[in-house]
Length: 206
Image (tube, rainbow, N blue to C red):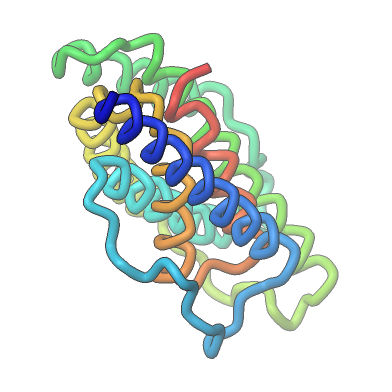
């Protein structure tokens, strides 16, 4: 009986936490963050293995700004099917070496790629509407891709390490909490918050 009561209380706590975090995350998408934004109530760093997954997904998204700057004003398209396929094949091979499900990792990284393109398209639109905000220098795309590859490899490892957490019933509320913490820590604006939500869509599976 005591075990049943503890389990019921745990589920109530998890559900309540998920509701609070979801509300805060949706609000964050609607309102861009400022450098002086108030800290959220949940400021304690999560001990979940999902936190590094979210941190690395956000770090990978940050490279989208550099990719966009490198492509801006050139003929290089945002969509790059050949490059995308190469990334998916590489992460699947790495996942297999780590004992993770390669098909599952492919799905998660398809989300990473789409999230990256959300940022690129958003920045292109911003720079078109406000030319004075457009980048005046172009990063070396080959160097940027080296950084993307580094973060990608670390993210595959984090996903493999968090396999049990990603399959647990508490995955979604824990992932939402970690996303809120990372959004605050990295001062993500509305565009990058929306992209991060897209990047994390399949982390907990279907």
